Amino acid sequence: MPLKTLVLLTVTALSGCAGVNVANYSKEQPELRLEEYFNGTLDAWGMFQKRDGTVVRRFKVLIEASWEGDRGVLDELFTYSDGSQQRRVWTITRNADGSYRGRADDVVGEASGAVSGNALHWLYTLQLPVGDKTYEVKFDDWMYLQEDGVMLNRSVMKKFGVRLGEVTLFFKKRA
Figure 1 (cartoon, rainbow, N blue to C red):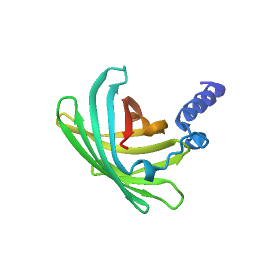
Figure 2: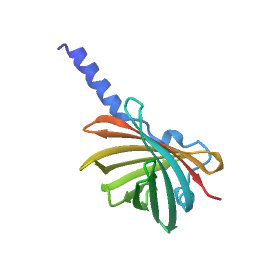
Figure 3: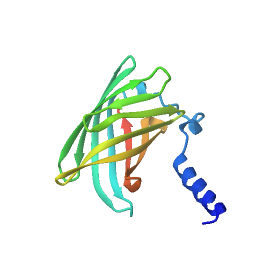
Figure 4: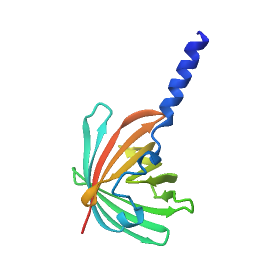
């Protein structure tokens, strides 16, 4: 393989890994203050789509959230379109540098995230039950605060670097 081709392939592969920097959203409004937005009761509606776009599962989430100092708890109750339910409780900590880390029972290790402007970028690995098996799936989560207490969320799910699908949600903070 010629050296030029090898260099071009390497640069292309590496640039695909770079992704978007959350700091790109620093001037976007309304400003997301995680401790304020995720404090109180929120409702969320979402769906999981396979990589071909097929909607596989729809759900609603009731979130009871609270913060004390730099530590927040998000108690999420998922109700799926088939009537089944699942609960996830996140414990989120704001780090001294303004970034965030989080834990939940079905999260492998710690989630990490950063906020800038109206955006949150959140990365974690989730233990995802599928039938009789459980898979460790990486989530690349982006949330964008909109006007009127609405937040949009788009997550890309990957396993071994292969895109499995997307989760789309929108949150509405109760008044």
